[in-house]
Image 1 (tube, rainbow, N blue to C red):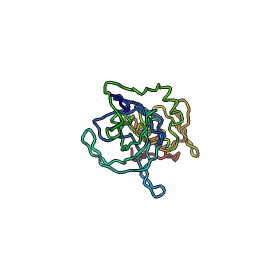
Image 2 (image 1 turned 90 degrees about the vertical axis):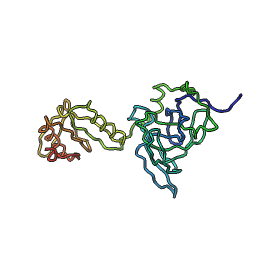
Image 3 (image 1 turned 120 degrees about the vertical axis):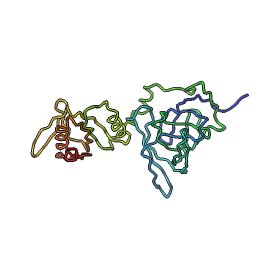
Image 4 (image 1 turned 30 degrees about the horizontal axis):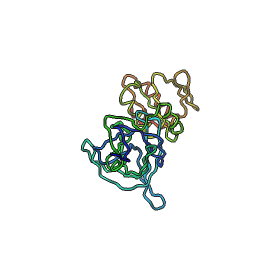
Length: 258
C-alpha cells in the first residue's frame, strides 16, 4: 500500500527555521500527546497588541555554551502532565517543523528539559496523518557530523550579554560548584572558577589588585560568589575583602563570612 507519510525512527534531526534553530535532535514519541521544546529564561511580552514569548535554548545536548535566543507568537497557556505525572502550566507556540523535504506547522509547549536529555520531544498530535514511526530505527532522514554542527552553530556561541562572575572556591570538581557554574552559563553569564589557593593580592591604597595563576590580573569581574571552606576562612575572607575594595559585587561579604 502506497503512502505519502514520512517514516521516522525513534530519534531524528530536524530544524525550526522560524525560530532560527538550524538543527536539533528530537525524540519521536507516539506515546506523548504534546510536543515539547527545551527552553529557559521564558518570558512573555506584548508586540503590536499581540502576545509573544521569548526564550533561550541550548539546542545541542550536553552543550551549555551554545545558545539560541528565540521569539514566537504565543498561542496558549496549557496545563501539561509529564510522563512522571507532574502537572505544569506551559506556554504554547506554533511554528514550522522542517525535516528537509518535509515541512509542516506544529504546536509545541516550552519547558526546561535538562533532566530529560533530548531538547525536543515530537508527540503524536504533531505527527497525526503525516508520520509513520519505525521504533527500531534512528536517523532515517540523516545524521549530521560534529563538524557540520559546529559549522551550523559557529555564529550561535554565547554572546557576552550577561555578567562575568567568578566562583571563589577550592575544589572545581565539587558537584555544587559545578552546578553553580552550569546554572550561571544557562542564564547567559560568563562563569569562571577561581581557586582560592592560586590567587594573590597586591595591596595598594589607590589601586588594589588580585592576581591569578602567574600574574593575570582579575580586574573585570562583575560579581564574585565566595564558597570558602573553614580551613582557609582567613585567606578566603581577605580575598573577598579585596574584591569588595575593587568595587566587585560579592554575594556574601567578608564580614558576613567571618
